[in-house]
Each structure stands twice: as C-alpha cells, then as structure tokens.
Image 1 (spheres, rainbow, N blue to C red):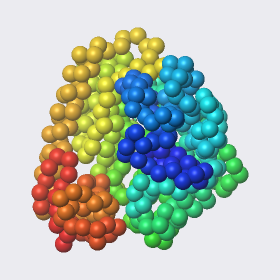
Image 2: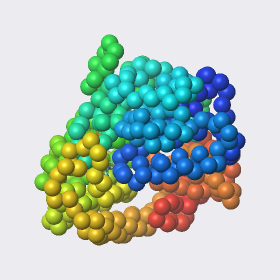
Image 3: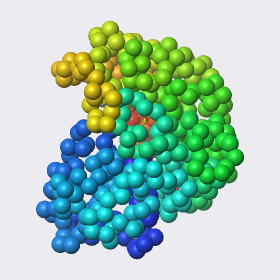
Image 4: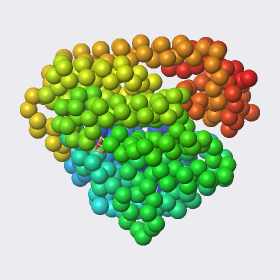
Length: 419
Ligand code: 5AD
Ligand code: SF4
C-alpha cells in the first residue's frame, strides 16, 4: 500500500513540475519520508532518519513526512523536528502538490475522500501495475492502528479501477495487483453513486480486460471468504493461484480478543476449501505472536494451524503495542523473552516446511512472467503461484510469460530454464 502511495506522490509531483528521482541525497530538492506505523520499530526510526537527512541534505531542500505516522503524530512531528517542512497523512496523498510550498503545512484529515480522485500515472515497474481498489478499513482489530491512520473504509468506483488497469495494460502491464486493506469487502461503501459491485464481481470485470493476463490481490480477510469468492479465485484462469489469508493467531480465544470475527475452525475450513477447489494454489499468511494473554496452549493452536495448512510464505511478528488501539490497554502483556521464543519456534518450523515445499519443486514446470533484469545475465519473474524464479537471459525475456523448468532450488527462489 505504501509503495503504491509513493508512486501516486511521484505522479502528482510530476503533474506540477518535472521532478526526477535521485539516489543521491545531496542532490535532492525534496525529500519525502513515507512512513508506516503498524509496529513500533519503523516509527522510532523516523526521527533518526530525519536527523540523517537534515545533516546531509542540500541547503534549501525540503523534507516532508507522509503516510501512517504522519496521520498519527501530525503537527507533533514538526514540533519535535522543526526541520520538517510539511506533514501529509495517508489519506491525503492527492493534496501533496498543494502542501510542498506551504511552510509547516499539516494535512491529516481522516475523512478526506481521495476515492474518486484520478491520480497521475507513475509505475516503478511498468510490467506490473498496482491498483488501489479501496482505502481505509472498516474493522477494529484490537492490535491494529490502521483504522486510526487510514480512516474509514471506502471503495474506489469500479469505472476508475477499470480505467486505471486499461491504461496500465496499454503501457505494457500484463499483471495487476489489486490493493486494499480488506479487498474482499470491496463494494460495501462507495462515496459516489454507482452500481452495486462486490469483490467477486469486480474480479470478473477486471478479468474481461483484453491484454491483461494475470490478476493478483492483497489482502483478503478470512471473514469475507465466501464460497462464491473462492470459486471465482479457483476457476477464473486470469487469477493467479496465490492467496494471502492473514491468520494472526490460531487460537479462537485470542482471535476473539483480537476481534478478528472468525475462529480457528473457520480459518481451517476456508483453507481446506481453497485446497479442495484449487489444489495447486499457494497460501501465505501473517501471524502475530505474544498478543496479550496468549498462553502456551494458545500458541500451540497457532503451531497446529501452521502444521495443517503448511503456508508457503509466512510474515510473522512479535506483538507490538500501538497507541490508539484497544489491545495496548489489555492486562497480561506477554514478556518479551516469551514472545521471542515463540517467534523463533514458529519461524524455525516454517523454514523446515518451506524447504520441504521448495525441494519438491525440482524438475517441475511453471509459467513465469519475467519482469526484472538482474545482474549476472539473469532475469527474474514469478510463477502463477508466486514463486520467485531466476533464469539466464536478457531484455528479450522481459514482459513474456513462458514455461520454465526448475533446475535448482533454494529457500527463497528457484533457478530454472525456459522450455
Ligand atoms: N503488532 C504486531 N504486528 C502487527 N500487525 C498489525 N498490527 C500489529 C501489531 N500491533 C501485523 C499483522 C498484519 C500485518 C500487516 O502487520 O499481522 O496483518
Ligand atoms: Fe488492521 Fe484488522 Fe483492518 Fe487489517 S482488517 S487493517 S489488521 S484493523
């Protein structure tokens, strides 16, 4: 989401005057720090990073802080670091051209509606388009700061989404990644008059776009994974067979305290349904360990889900108490050493599972979309089910979807040859 927000900012700046990206800090006229606030670590890094920029920036260069920490801390950022010229919240991206010339402007309106705004065009990788389909979140998971930084959920009008994908396809993209905090809640809230359209219907519409060959999306919420949606996922040939299903915890007791709205059994049932409809699909997940009150038994439930589902990819985190969240006030916060030990055990077991999965790939053939030139005469791309491939080759492979046989396996990526 933040990567796409950054692309939007670059596009908006380019509409105003031609900016050029630079890798050289001392050359920059404008420095934008696009922040995250989902865990504490990135927030604490912000002020040390501002200090580094202050020291090395060229005279007169402006510094802006944008994103979720900007929404959360607002004017306090300027109070603590007066070198910062402007603060722009996550929901206010389209206002960027107006704030860069206003000394100490702060725009963090949580109700601001960017959902019907047509952003300019800028893509880091023109072969793969990221397209927002909604902003904000209508849930209130008790550990999560996002609803307080990105505001209430609103869906982007369907015709804007289709237009944006068509534009991307015309400039060379064969793959789109639909983005939202809760993608499969799409269509619940629109701020404009428009025909009803839920996520499954949106997927059908998007898949009718000529020239678009692959559709990905992130993240769906387990609660909204009805059979109709999973059938569309399984049977629509343009939808990549990789799905991220954020578990958070395997314990129904903890899930309740997290206010996730589903149980361990529902989560397992949905994963089983994915595997029944689409055995080749890969499933990835997010897990938090050490949520307040998490007992050894609760953690064993999480380990049990890991064993049963055997996620191909796992993003795992120690619980980090966040301001503006309910769980930060809960009693029975878990000691750091206990949470660390749980995280280590979870990640260790997951590594073994991934090694088993990857080792079984030797000799298999996958269709790979080549999208990036790498050093050493290699090109990388992803298979339909999300595996990262490296193949010997050059520019002529870029933008092509070709069958590739696996010749070497490692934990994070596969080497292969085009067949
Ligand atoms: N502590 C740890 N992890 C968190 N996440 C969200 N909030 C917190 C928190 N307070 C994780 C969730 C989410 C991912 C983006 O970040 O797993 O799915
Ligand atoms: Fe946060 Fe929950 Fe919304 Fe995801 S669904 S953004 S975890 S509140």
